[in-house]
Image (cartoon, helix red, strand yellow):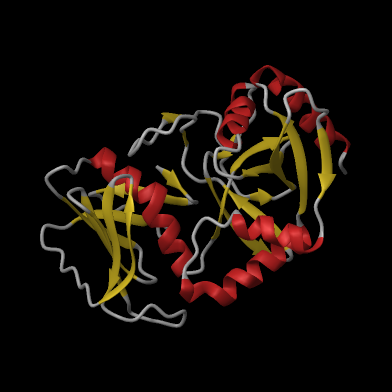
Length: 285
């Protein structure tokens, strides 16, 4: 299964996949809780990230553990390609895959500085990666779902992994599941029309709620406001990545156009919003 450009296998090591993260069951995980990076309530479960060493950017040979109460523990050594897991009384492979793809891998890849994550939906428009960001309940999922139903290739439903390549900001396909609803601990439904390779990010649209009768407008965002929107749209914020996070935000701000689109809050006008965005991208060279 493709997850953030990695192949994930349960209980199986494929020697022909040297880049792969291999998920392997372990009956005797040793979970060291001497250093706790994060402890919070997530999806109505207690979640903790722990380690045997302090969380610092230059840490090596570090064991990282991700614990989901009553469900699963993942354990990996930083920089290695095998993730061990152990299921508990409420754990299933479906739940393990949910927590792995939605939460643990984005955190792990952020710690390892492989990818930077934006909280956004992303699709291809005219073969160009376009992202949608928004405030909470701002229509991001609805917009992404509308484009998918129109036949656009999905890059990501909710979390977009990005990296910099020769001053280009690359958008990375994540996992081929779409969740237009908000059901806890649910992968969503499988999407066949799913991007298979990273592409240069073309634009980001910040969805701004407007009155249902207002005109649909697109305005480019510049300066401090652009940086603020990007920072607010950061998916994984860890104190050990403060320097690299600022650097990546600056690279995105300098290399990717960001637009406010004022979206009338009327579901019946979504087609009009859709046509406006598609026409804008077609004209945007």
